[in-house]
Image (tube, rainbow, N blue to C red; front, side):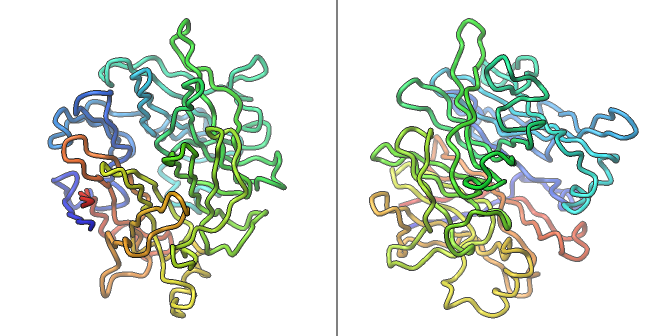
Length: 414
């Protein structure tokens, strides 16, 4: 049995906080191996801290939003993920820089992003904390280890070599062999696009250099064939890694119907991955899901769950939903938000555990979205805690004045 309780988070939300993601909380993270102190990113550019397991919060840092380089270039800064390395008990904060040909205030939606984005302008940085996020190192550029890499050519496949990388898939994992941090990313590159697609899901391996007190980011390897992104990874009980991805755009190669969900397996700690196959229910039916974020998470009970926007079976889809899938490039509808247990032996979802977390209400706009959520295991209660803000597809009329409440879901698995 799965019990779901919803509460506002943050607890106080003003009317102006309801507009355009203003109250959204991201990347909730325990700051050390022990204790209940936490950090999260709010409103995209604020770092908040709790010392009591998320009961009370205070803002500890206002983060940089925009930087004017010239009249032709304006840099926007984005923050996250916050990643905790349990082997070394180190906290990592990632920062992502992107450039536009106009002031950031004019980049109001995805379409403006495409219009003003400066190609090959992205760069990733990170900071380290050894005291649970109280103090941080200087900002360090993310550069692959090797003399041929620098801030412009920071990876064997990315930036001036034809693409970019972006972090965000959380959490990472540690290899059994050498305790290197496995850092998943999604990127875009023309290299090997015939087998991996131009959108690519890969990973770096962070090996700790004790002399330098820093990570050496080894080769951008472990690509999943087929052009997926927004990967969510969990170690199975038999030691293998399970990866469930989002299908992204009209990018070849694909191996099955684009309404299905690709899953891939690695038996060498993420260095190589199997050709994706469709995720299915234990009754043999395919899982139908739009192009949206999902998450694998292991509950305190030891059971593994997948949380995602899951639609009815193909033969049960009505004409309105089919039309919406086609109209939005299979990115919607992003409701309901559902969780189900993973059968780790069969690599299927258990139909009798399917539980709706939230669904579209009668009369609510068809463009509503329950996606782009973040979750963690509560160290005190054992619950799965999920952060979610109601949002909308870009075509939603008057989107700036639509309600955007931010919620915290407490999910108890019995």
